[in-house]
Image (tube, rainbow, N blue to C red; front, top):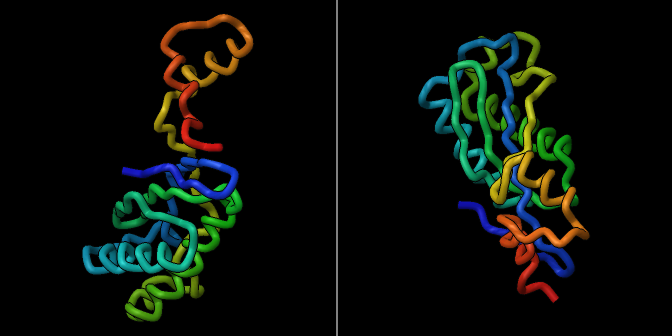
Length: 150
């Protein structure tokens, strides 16, 4: 399970669900390549502030659940993951390049969505809307989010 990242002056829990389709939606991701993609994810985690909570793949796309820090935008996270995984896949399994003409592993597009651990969109919307009012319901637990920060 993901944990808060605590830096000098902030505490964050930023989770993203990312989906990257393979170029031309080619069904090239078999079991061996899926394991390679997971191994590359672990290597990326060691070098960048991108933690892979979960990685799952179908034959023609990969789902990532990642946690990162606020200094990295979603676009930077996506670019880092896509560029490193593509380069490493072609290096480790060169036969994949034959199935994907043009030299690209991923399409240029992607899907991104935030993942909430402490409430859904409606719950957070209501909590924010009621700020400044004497509102004493289920939102009380949210007030301890920054507990322990000075």
